[in-house]
Image (cartoon, rainbow, N blue to C red):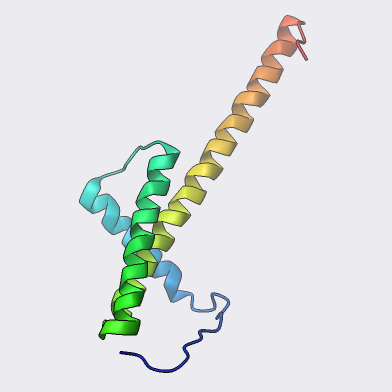
Length: 115
């Protein structure tokens, strides 16, 4: 059990090795489950489930002699899913921009601007 006040200071993501760990975790997820397609809220639910596991690992470390390694492992899983959501949102935004531009171009050919 950890005693006394615990405070962690933001390290400003200076450890570049963290991004490698996220990449390795992401690759491992694809190996285990394949490339997944889900509704955005399902992705959020999976992320929240992992966040719950991180919370449990943190509690275990703070109050029951758990390990910081488990805290790190769960945090990497949360980060991996969160970054996957960012990546999918960016891809969707790009696809929507292309579709919108194509629609604008197509409307210009027909001469019927419905705006």
